[in-house]
Length: 426
Ligand code: KE4
Image 1: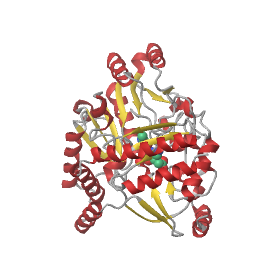
Image 2: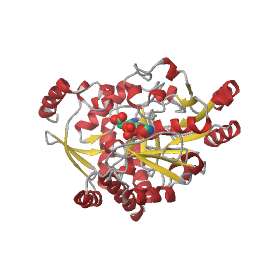
Image 3: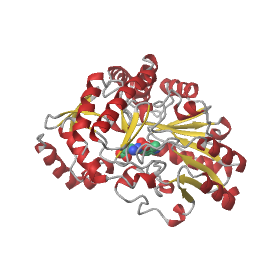
């Protein structure tokens, strides 16, 4: 059994001064009924905890580490930028460069604004949709997580789902009442919502490939259906690509599927590991933002030069390496290893993967939305998680999270992971 003495000491101390001992709930390992380890450092596909245990990491700081941890190009870019100034609060060239890159890469984005988290991105996209349409109601889907935005912490995924509290305390009923939460992959539910509320609905927001209730695929034609019904009723379609943006393809899900939203929220990969989010879309909508338009949004550290330099370095390196093709290669090897492990175990668990994002569902049922995920065997998941961790492989500590492969994961890493998976399945 790996030694976790120092992690345990740190966690005890952390809980005295930080709620739950963590700065984000999912890190508390509650879904796997255990205590978290504390990290000392991370490089490439590996992390080392404070007790010296080395782990192959498939969480990748929840998505940003697409090149692997602490990529040299990012460290060099941030170091160079820091020498010229760590924060300005004044327009700077990095902001223009990353905005142009996003506009070039993401099909639906004509203008973009940088913020500091995915939550800020989705929160502002919602406000902008309401300001642009003059309507108040929003549709979201059960199990989709869009950050801790008051109006979207209704039947949310990720940590909210992990902790069995998909509706947060502290969100007034008046806020939640403006959010309709529907089952994903059920067009009839959306048709009914528009039939009953049509002209009051400002927007639909969704993760086009939900990855906060595991990894769930939209049924054939579903995204196009959402595009058509929102257009028909004068509502906006918002893709929350904080997780999928720049990861599943250069232009995200909207490039993969050809379905073009009106607004897109971005985050994670875009910051190279530093705090960055962004939202963008049609220029006629984005021009409603202050200082030109009536919808207010602001941020002291928005466009921070270090964060912009990190994001630019990461995105350019991803393109230079033709990262998406390589991630597909590594992902394919990873998937065949998992499928072989499942065959050996005789378990008919469901394995979903798109590029470098994956989820192993501990159940044989078809997975079409979060209701199906809730039928998984969470005890079996927890046993698997701990056995894999003890064997040196760190998967996301919740059945409701996706896993991430990076360009730093080697064929040997993937081969070892397949072996560990085979030995950890029970
Ligand atoms: P942040 O505010 O955490 O940067 O982004 C919120 C967010 C928005 N949209 C999607 C699709 C997201 O996945 C997220 C955040 N993802 C979680 C992991 N499932 C972050 C991990 C955490 O909460 O600690």
